[in-house]
Amino acid sequence: MTLQTVSYTQHLGQSQAVGLDFEQICDLVNYGLILLSRDMTIAFWNLWMEKHSRLERDKVLGRHIGDIYPGLEKKGFFWKAQNVLTLGNFAFFSQQMHHYVFPMPSERYLSEGYEYMQQNVSLAPVRDLRGQTVQVLVTIADDTNAAIYMDRLEKTLATLKESNRTDYLTKVANRRYLTECLEAEIDLWKRKKSDFVFIILDIDHFKAVNDNLGHQCGDRVLTGLADFLRQNLRPYDKLGRYGGEEFCIILPQTGLNSGLKLAERLRAQVAQTSFACPDKEQEVTVTISMGLTSTENVAHLTADTVLYKADLALYEAKETGRNSIKCRL
Image (tube, rainbow, N blue to C red; front, side, top):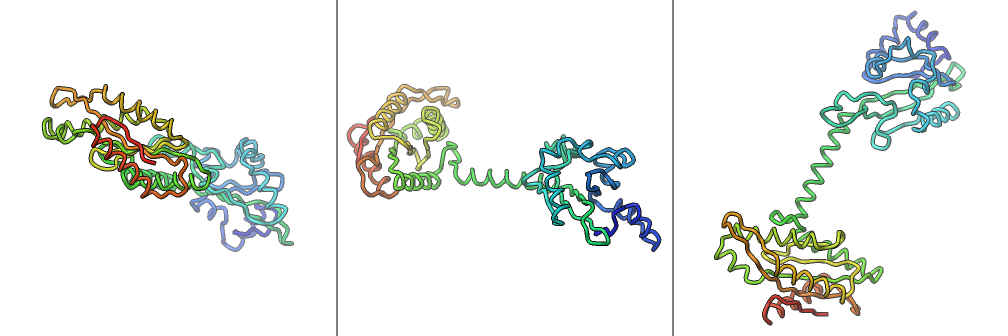
């Protein structure tokens, strides 16, 4: 809607003379409409604004919009409004960036968590008969439902993404995501020569646990070991289940000696840790064998070579008595 007169009241009078009630039309639309004079005083306030701001129009007409909403200055509202008046261009506030401009209570606050209505706001130039911009028409659209649905969609996508990355039993990274992390670490090593250590570990004689105590107990050992390892690694280390009773650990920004010390500490502590099997009313102790490789003094590197070297080292640890650590460079 483009108004062609300085006075909104005069414009309404002219429109009504030809049978059009613009005030009634403005009250019927499902948007907030505010007409601001050059000094930012309110010249019109439609019924939608009355309902959602809970302020009747006769209480706000003629008042400065900043007196009604003191936070507009911080939102950059007056700067944009001045640009509309000076340049005659439109200006916008998007819900995704600003969430809201006018703090109006959200009708779905208790059920959805938005205290204020989420809004898309536009500022349009209103020109007089000479084409001069003399007023600003503010249009407010309630975007709360769309924001809620977008939040739900993002949470659903995040959950799906996490489930695609996570081993269903142990809740650590699955093999596919672990491989992606390894490739990312290799890329970082190629760019910045940031050394890392890669470990494959295997539970010794795990088949005997399943055969003698049952697969439920075996699952308890797997989940218990995953929890133990996660609690004893740094927040930025990556732990994943490679398959069966095998786990992998990526230690970023770690040299060979530091990696060996950590591996030895984990091996010794696991051997002293008991894992509960409530259905059998007993606790199980296990040992682990570990194969380790490092990027120190390596010229070329791929994910396949890292896995191959660590796997060879693990095989040596298993063949030489288990409950030990071997390294391949």
